[in-house]
Length: 344
View 1 (cartoon, one colour):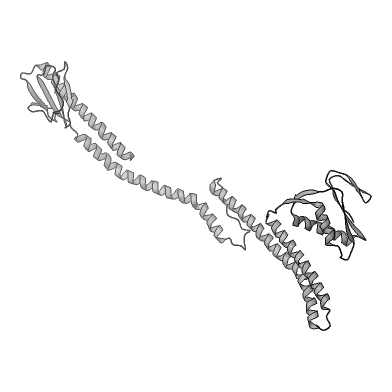
View 2 (cartoon, one colour):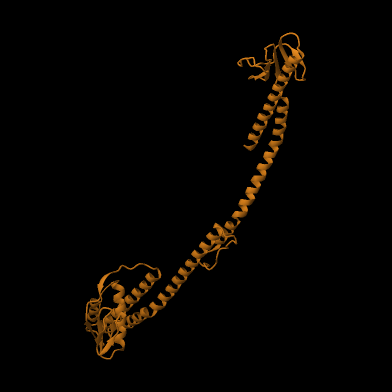
């Protein structure tokens, strides 16, 4: 496009120069004719070699009117000729516009531009290919490394280019993602190992009991075996619930919360252990203790506390419930504000 514009501008300028030259020639010829007072009126023509001859004007403009002027006037027609008329109208001189030098110059210019433009295009294509290939080289390195990473070697990381650009930030983000995946897979493996370890003993104990009873079915105390199997099943259920809770916590799964009363949860714990062997559990509710939370998680928390207390208590476990911010005396001990008390 630049070459086309250049050729067009050059051709226009050369044509204008040729027209100006022809116009100047006919003006000069009219002035000379007026000066030397050449006899005879009529039309004259300026040849390309500069000779002035009489005869028909060379391609005058038929649409341009000839108006006598005090000074010689020129008129460029639609053809390749220029006409000038003397001030008194006696002489009219026409001249061809010599466009041959302009055409030759434009032809030479085009002959130079065509190979030059082709060379520039080839150079630009090579530079573009080289620059794009160099810019995408880090992307290819990241792609190769990412293709080799599998679930067994998530510890590997992608190469981060030294340039602080989008590719560098992309590699850094992908490395962060790989780090999180590596941590998640490591936690999953540890969780699987913990599950296998924790379930081995609870499963082995009821299996051994059932196998012993099955070898001597006539001598086995089947109600007792069933009771022990039921107890083992409860332990397994509690263990599975604990493992599921750990899995949800590791996965950051949101737990639904609702308004609860801690006093009701404490009474449920007392009813849970009622009739079981071991220390009894009594509940002292000083005031309602509303709070928002997960009932299943709070039940699990209180169950662990009560079971630990009953395991170490001598005769009785006392639970005292009161809202935060008030001091109460429970069992002869002062409980500080902001703390609840699980007594033993």
